[in-house]
Image (cartoon, rainbow, N blue to C red; front, side, top):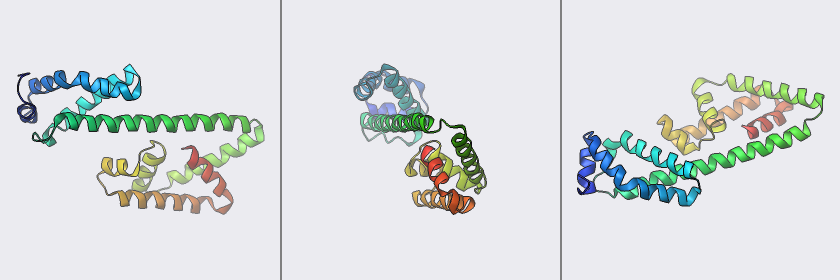
Length: 191
């Protein structure tokens, strides 16, 4: 079966044939691993992303077009996963920098209490959001997903996602009032 064309293997894969999946994995996994490693410089990341790509291939096997390049298909998936990895690491670095900075500026007990109280009020405002609005807001702010990723995950349009995020921000601002707007901005920036 290793000598079969990709098109034949994909047709068999679409029928749920594990042997076809294994053949595609054997044929492309090393090449894909090398591609990912060239961008990440990490064996662990390259292994994780390679496994995730083939996991997604299996999950989406019914949607793969056997007439298109399988190699290009898995490279696109891998590239997107690499970008997501880098984006999340960048956000984590920004958050860590913020926390270090906040720790330096919040040394005084009074400042810490005020900040904690404002953060608690902000969290309560988020909890008051309508369920769908809250879900979208948290995916954006807590999970760091882009509007497009949220739209794909929830199977809704990007404009709906954008509208819900704007609605959430408006409701949070209204709930906290003008005096607490600074707190909202600090909390939202830290999410």
